[in-house]
Length: 208
Length: 208
View 1: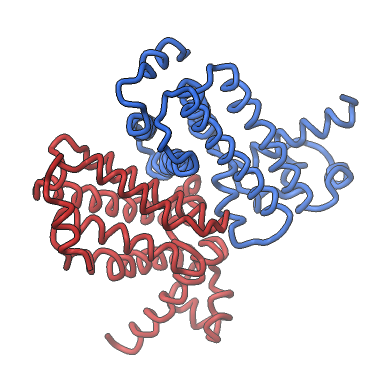
View 2: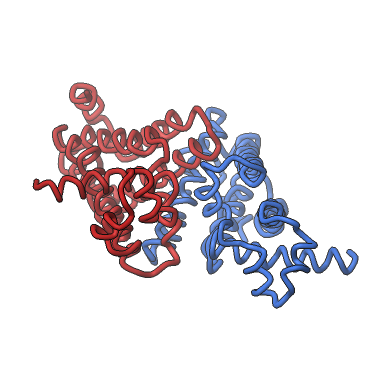
């Protein structure tokens, strides 16, 4: 990575944090320049427009998500253990950041605003739902889950679990948000398991 | 209701619609005046500040929600039928409006913004979760649901189902959002039912 690319990456990392806290609308080149103690004209040279900054911030957040959530889960055995690892890291991604998940906030901001930023967000969200559904398929292939489990429906419900944890923890400041999220996830897993299978045992053996 | 109160109510109804579409931050006295073809000074006389307008808009939305979702469900027999009526009307409240549920958008906007608007929103959301949990208790009392069902956990998961339907329908434009939401709700109900109870029959007999 050259010096220019490094600077750009550092700016985008900060932009993701700022967007989590103040939203994509609040993420202006002026504000970001102030945060980083850089000149506004210097930042303009990198991004040229607020829209370009939004698009690249979302892409950078997507790359961070892959590093923080997806990659580590790929090191965990396929099936229920990997699905559980994805869920746990996803929860941590949302609940451990001061501003919460940038994608949740951006989803509300952009749902009625057609344009390149919305397009990138929709692509990232669909990719993630597809990946989650793929992990559910893995659990079926490993015979942890029944063949009749609908992977897209399962992914939809896990997504709902994450959204309500976000709501419960960030708006309602409910200390039980994480515990409730885990119980909801466990309920989904239990309903999907092959009756009498050894997936519980394999989960405990594999879980970190 | 006097003429002044009627005008105020008409303004607030419009304000709820506008807040659903553009968010509470976008709901300014100037913009509302423009929408209603009223003078800005006339609206200032009613609300005095943007914050007061936000607070009263949230209260008005809460009153609309009670009329649209809560009251009609109270006419349905207690237990699983009432819980289902609440869920169906809640879905309709969110999915049938052009801007989606104003509370979902406001939850993201206000989660990091302490103040009277956030306080009102938190109170309304907690009231609603309590009411939902109460409806689950009703289903336990009617012996439709098992005694071991945790009403707060059930309400939390139904809330997640609504949030993901909002996300799926408004951001991803997924035509299956409503169907997936119903399947998720049915899964929760099925897991909560007293095995071999007649609640299925009673549901069909009572459902509109």
